[in-house]
Length: 218
Image (cartoon, rainbow, N blue to C red; front, side):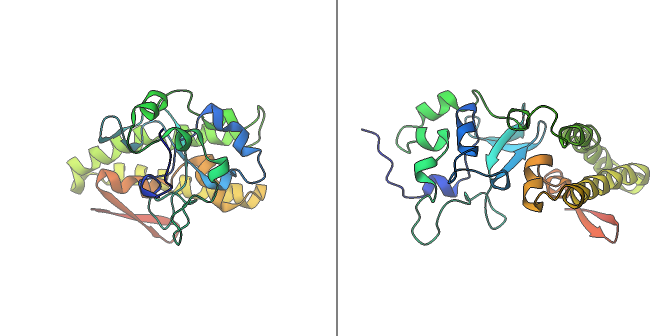
């Protein structure tokens, strides 16, 4: 019988992606909160386990956040190496067994949750999310970064466009927190990872500089 030994090894490799079957966990008193979730948007670079490589995502994925700036699942208790929500753990955690990855691979890309599955129709932030996705799409950012790196010294106009994306991404998060009263920790769910963080994966480092950003090659 495949039985989890709660050794914490898989938890240190990253939090689980969420599936439709995990929706009830968002309603459990000791389940998941929006502040526990990060959205990986379509087009972002992310590690694909079956392919064993970092690739652009073909669809949106919701994952349990990491901790300490890493992907180590936030629910892994560092002192005991056990899961703090084990009884209410997501589907992937229930399915994964270190000695036999096949059951997890069978559900890996099936019935994944998206933000629209969680937010009710008419939610006031949905319209803002759609606008943010248009102006700050990972695909657009990736292409812009690639073009800038090809001709860095002659790319001032493109760099200005990239800075505009970064400024919008930062300001919309701050505005929503200010106007809605939603916790800042939930912005990773509503708008995904900050563009400045994603940009480093494409060879450009963005550093806040007053109300703008300075850019340099990584």
